[in-house]
Image 1 (cartoon, rainbow, N blue to C red):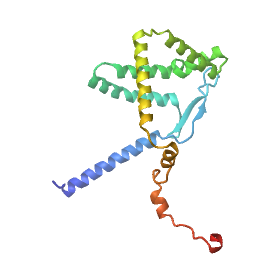
Image 2 (cartoon, rainbow, N blue to C red):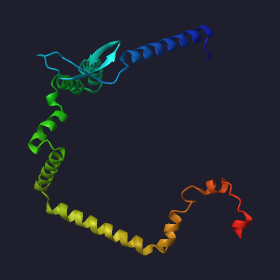
Image 3 (tube, rainbow, N blue to C red):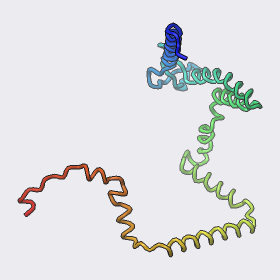
Length: 204
């Protein structure tokens, strides 16, 4: 059923108002200046808190994060109500704790662990790799699982041999067809591209 003119105008104004509100909210949150170091003024020490310039004032990134997490509370509550449990609310609480104590973040834990390797990230990664290898090798490996892998290996080899035995095309012909302009989709390109005229002197 077609909308009445008045109803159509009302909906159009409502959509325009919604768009305006969205644009204003985006503008309010927009980062106007690249991250700048801020002085927290604690004990005369500067920890170089990074922030942004918003609405003409400098705002620390931690404050921006706190605002976002506050808005996430309602979303987490709705998700928990829909799916049951409290995992979403717990995730928001964990994020708040991490925002207040950066030392619990994974990046901070990596930096702390790197001290044992001379602050070398390569040394840290190598140690983690070796630890993972040792952990995997220490896991039980039953004979039944070993036999299963051996059967899978033999089945794969036999399938490969059957494929190779049934192949009658020489490899060079296969290679030429594989990289041919037609297969690569250049057929129309070469047909539509005008060929440069060959001069009589060049032809001779």
